[in-house]
Amino acid sequence: DAKTTQPPSMDCAEGRAANLPCNHSTISGNEYVYWYRQIHSQGPQYIIHGLKNNETNEMASLIITEDRKSSTLILPHATLRDTAVYYCIVIIQTGANNLFFGTGTRLTVIP
Amino acid sequence: DSGVTQTPKHLITATGQRVTLRCSPRSGDLSVYWYQQSLDQGLQFLIQYYNGEERAKGNILERFSAQQFPDLHSELNLSSLELGDSALYFCASSVEGQAQTQYFGPGTRLLVL
Image (spheres, rainbow over the protein chains, first blue to last red):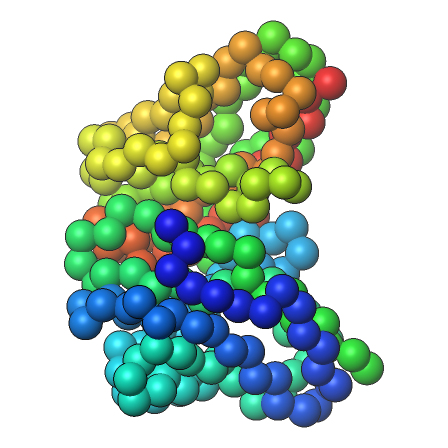
């Protein structure tokens, strides 16, 4: 079930920040926002997740709006290796049995 | 490297045949998930096993079956293959039964001719 909306594609210049938006206006209070990416034909890779606070790790930052209806994944200094399809997934924190991958955003980092 | 291994990497077979795909989860992970990715369908969840028991089923055809063995490796069996079964098949694993953070293998590319 598609609970998220993402733009189909985006470009970003190498070295610049890539900001990938995601709309999840029907998110419930016990649902988290997870981000995965899939580099061409490789297995998807977990990036980051959050509930309502902003989160940062070595790969990216996640900004969630106060009403939790949207979020933005930020890759602070995009490299060519960040070219991938990025998936925003809304999922309950306990009891979920699988991930639903929508169509994602195809990010192309341009040299 | 996610720690999840899948064999074989590539498989070419004919319609009507049967194949077995194998997955070894990360050390310590009890759950294994299988996904299918075809060009027109995106990533589709097939089935989940947790510590040897089937836990959840997704869009898995009756011609497909899976199992998880006592050593926690898993096999996905695809039979009576059709052209439309050509796809990338990914295995993922997670700690316990939590599906949120999964570690994916490199996939098996199946081509049915």
